[in-house]
Image 1 (cartoon, rainbow, N blue to C red):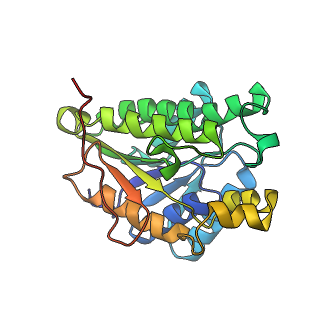
Image 2: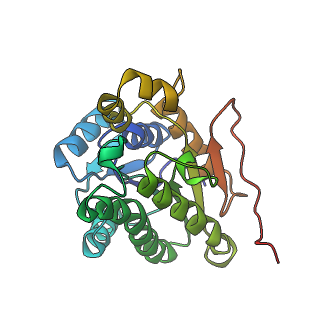
Image 3: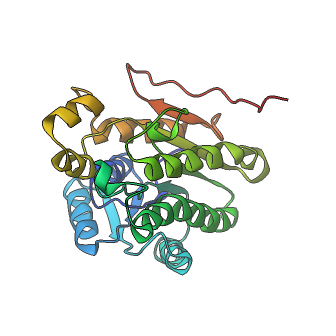
Length: 260
């Protein structure tokens, strides 16, 4: 897909990876709908994009709510005429990663919110985006997961890891939509990225704990935005998962089948 003149929606784009992605898409010529549950942060992202010379508008709302997500996408189509690109970026982690603050000690209301935003938000967004994109002949959906969702080892934030694993598997399962509907759904799995969410995690643990879990040099949000653009513009990619860890170019996971 050519990003120039496209209409893009980036959820959770008030900061971090979302803001960097919205800015990059706008620089490449897209009109960007900036979503965040915090309207003030969304407005700031729009201001930054417009300062860069780009085009953007605010679409506030909670992606974890079906009616809310439907309204966000309906508003994008009403404001800009269609939807070509959706980046399901909105995501949260348990409130810290110390043993007192994660599953099983964390109360259900707090870990359920992680599932609601990270899983339900992606499913709602994808479903409503597909409905909109079918009307205009196709589109691209990029789901932002995490390296936390890859593999079968331990992780200090288990609900977050499980939610991101769900996004990875969901994306891969939608590969046939590329041929059937001309709607390509792909997934990006960042490792540790220097975002406000990660900095809050860093503040919640000791220096020793931080050194044990995080790399000495973190990926920058703009690098993930570059990866998003790669997966949008490569028309051969559908249902693919990019592992954003280690030296670049970052690899794609090979599709696998369950053992018989």
